[in-house]
Image (cartoon, rainbow, N blue to C red; front, side, top):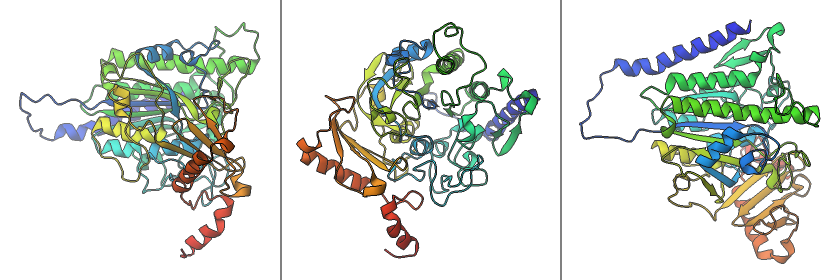
Amino acid sequence: MFYSLKSRLFQSLLSMACLSFGLASCGSKTKKKATETPQPKPNVIFVMVDDLGYGDLGSYGQKEIHTPNLDRLAANGLRFTQCYSGTTVCAPSRSVLMTGQHTGHTTVRGNFGFGGVKGLAGGDGRVPLHDEDITIAEVLKTAGYVTGMTGKWGLGEPGTEGEPNDQGFDEWFGFLNQRRAHHHFTDYLWLNKEKQEIKEEDRHKPENYTHNLFTDFALSFVEKHGSKDKPFFLYIPYLLPHDEYEIPQIDERYKDKDWTEQEKIYASMVSLIDSDMGKIAKKLKDMGIDDNTLLFFTSDNGGARRWDGRFDSNGALRGKKRDLYEGGIRIPMIVSMPGTVSAGVVEATPWTFADVLPTVADFAGAKTPANIDGISVKDLLTGKGKPGADRAFYWEFHEKGGKQAVRKGNWKAVRLDVDKKGFHSDVELYDLSKDLGEKTNVATDHPEVVKDLLDVMEKEHTLSQHFPFPHEMEKLEKKLAGGK
């Protein structure tokens, strides 16, 4: 029965909490001077939903889908209009987030690559994080954090070096394989390294809807660890609103709408996310730790469906998931921490997933790895400055013909057909300050800008043994054979 799964889940959380803090409480503590008032390290909660479009929240212009809790979080916190995901699909975007390295350097640059393993859903080429990769969780553990995660991982199959417990997470519950996570009712989930089976007759019960299970885990994690001496890091990579579009029941607000069934389900998914964000925010406030918890809300990439004419999920942005146009990589980002993060501010300074690791490390007083591409934007969050506003941002994508993109200042360059044409110079150039929808290619008018951004592409791309572009195969073979 499902009850036994849920019971085992919470019992495991409780026992892990005891293990996490029992050893610390047994040792003798050095007394501090009465005059010392050290600033407590903030808890960190990073919520990342799956395939939510830039325009799917009320605070980002949505008119049809109700998101009052997230809109309130944005009104009382910091809402970013030019934040970017790691890339335009699942696994590599998460790799950028976890490692602080963009897709020209991070280990996992695509959903499938060379030298990977067969995934739980049957596909070959699932590349895991390597042991030498350093994640946010590992960085925060060096600063004394207890770390947890619930939702979709996508960066390591069973038995690989990429499993969450081997990448810094003390406690985790969810899907390892992103393809299996397409189904919101499932036959099993992972609690750490153990399968938690759900019997066939119980799989489609509302309480077994995986999103609900993940929210239960998250709230329990906060309850167990939020009142302890150690700060916590909780990563919540929710599955919604990724298809398949299925939900236990349509939200009452949409039942009588003259919409398609999928439109009703999608809207209900987004509103369920919103409702559970309200639960998390309330839990923090009820426990009195909201002003010491750095809370992020975002999406892993742009909307998978534009829903033009109904929700206009990607708004005026061109493209969608799997594009390196703005619709594929520009995402909603809301950050809150009352008394520390700027309140009621809309901020247009660009930043990206690669910046998350150094930023939370900065808040935690932890040392960052030397090989990251991101920078700390702590000053941006606290209203003390605008770090890195004019730096270059780089993306590459190894599907749909091979693509690269660079943004620097207001200039955006996109190079398509890399698989066929190699690192060619026939790129598209857009001025985002005048052309948010990337409709007018002005490359011929600004050859010096094109050259500058092509130089960035050359500098930021490194040869990957798992994700080479086709024209790099000979070079890779020589490298693997010991040649230069």
